Length: 204
Image (spheres, rainbow, N blue to C red):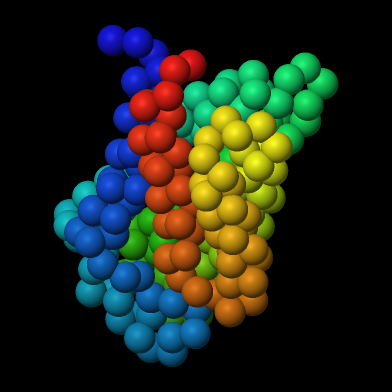
């Protein structure tokens, strides 16, 4: 099996795993919820096997995007040529996006693990920390996607519609941050899955 298939498969499976994981664990409390509602959630669900399993599947889904991002970086770099920096921006931005998105789950995990021992204001603060780390992860994701879109539009390494779609998703992510539109980051993963399918049909 060629290694290119590994990169493509990880890009296709990434959004699937994230969506499945979310479906298993369901929505977590949001920063805007009342202190009582947040505290009750963590107290009632502390140690829940279903929530831990769903969170782990979602975590693996984000991790799966990493080999895809590296594989796409190699394709973009070849297309952009020596001395280009946009392909590197794609990969660097993708790494920061993934690091922040994965780290955003840590406060929720801590609250679930110690929910019955912490006071309501502590778990509320953990929820706010996780939420804002998650929301702010969209900014490096947007920069990453914009750089990839620029390479696509310059070189046609992917169909131009994917380039324009990447640019629109990047803009949507930047606009969505102050509005905290939870779940919009899945568009990055879906764009990656579409790019993986297209590249599988094209010679290296």
